[in-house]
Length: 264
Image (cartoon, rainbow, N blue to C red; front, side, top):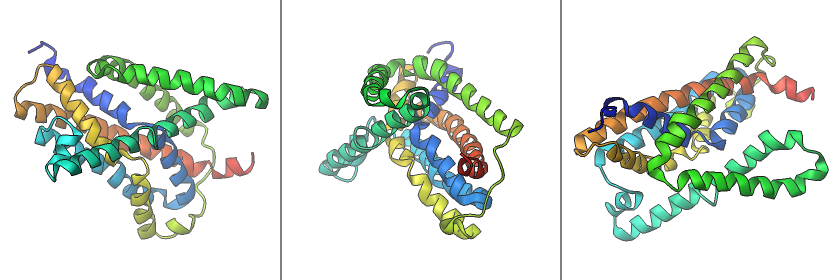
């Protein structure tokens, strides 16, 4: 076993966090914060149940099972169900929902503010081609995800988010406003937060990400099922709290931004 195997779970956990943290994880907590207003903390409680707790339990369950892929998990019900369920899940977190959402959110946030209106029609297909090409290159070699994502992209992502969070404390955008109807009471806010957490698609993605994590752990030199499950658990316990902390602050920023958006 490699000499760094004992600490290998740290970059694997960072990789898992980066895999989970997509476009939905950025926009839905902020949107929920805007709508929940003063009940944002109750809404966050519900959001973290399905946006953090459910993916955490899913990764741990798949790690414990030791099954190598999503189809094998579905095969425990029936082989045809394994084919159907794995196809639906991959389409959901791939070309049908998550991939277009990730590309368009990146375009709207990172590029649109710097272009003239006349440049948007030409710029969008160029940007998406480059963006999705880079994403495809990163995903083409799962064995290199830890080095490319866990050790490089995740620290940059976390650093950027930390800067935004610190900025939100130094110059807050405003005060939380009256909650929208679905968040009108604490109980309603928790229930709506649970529903909002499903929008991230992480409960589905966790099935695939867990299988990917198992493969990375095996590549790190772990062969016994008990060792693989332990390392997957460790990685999940790094990724899940990081997601929770980021959600809290993004929702806080969203709750404080309502008046600023009205005045634009």
